[in-house]
Length: 297
Image 1 (spheres, rainbow, N blue to C red):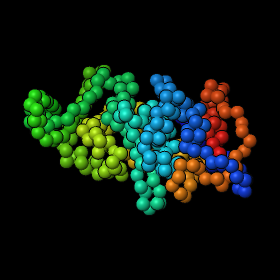
Image 2 (image 1 turned 90 degrees about the vertical axis):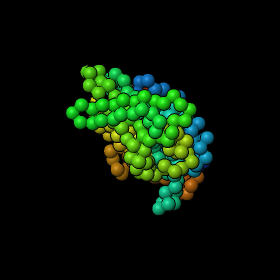
Image 3 (image 1 turned 180 degrees about the horizontal axis):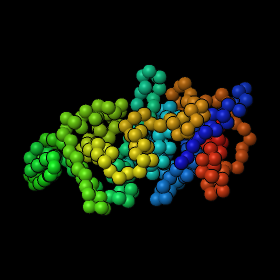
Image 4 (image 1 turned 60 degrees about the vertical axis):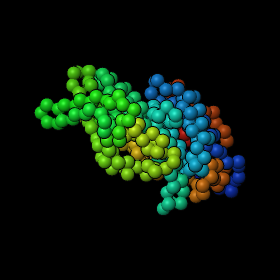
């Protein structure tokens, strides 16, 4: 798993009096590439993830003015989960105002397709899906010793109001798990999201997709998912992971500037350029990633 243990230490080494052109988020993302590559699952390509992240940042103005540590941490979280931010709906990087700090921070949110993708990767799930339910549908849902779920969607143009959503996961060993949540229950979950009412939020642009994701998320603890993924998904819907959250050493993290601009502060000069640590170098994972990210000064 990627780490940034030596980031703050490297930054603090540079003389305070020297001046040099500050680096942009684009520069830092490129330098983070080797560390992110270590975090990525095999099906993901670091070049593609970097391009998608940069496109997302460039097309969302508020992201360009967000707290750099929060933004970089959210991108790292996407890398660790192997999800692509943006139009595919795997995950989202949402800017929101932190009124207490007076800055814009980034919230990492997993989309419906991202939750489905993570569940399927476990290798123990034969199929998993979720559907919306409307008031004109024929729908039966029972719990107890003999659970039952029957859904016959209406063929009428007028489906009626959205009343809830359900999810079903069938396991390869023959078992299954199903959950239904009413619209009222889904709304309660929505209120917990800091960026729920943002114009950028998928709750605004793709409400039913997020409703279905909420049901999948609700039954997540009953699915045969690895502990590692279970723990990482806990960051879903909360403030995007900052750099300090990606490392076990609380004292090592990239401190964000105290103003809302894209460029990093000019308070420290850079050490002489060093050759980047190649992804395939023989050193073990954490040390190798730390050396790669240690060059972010």
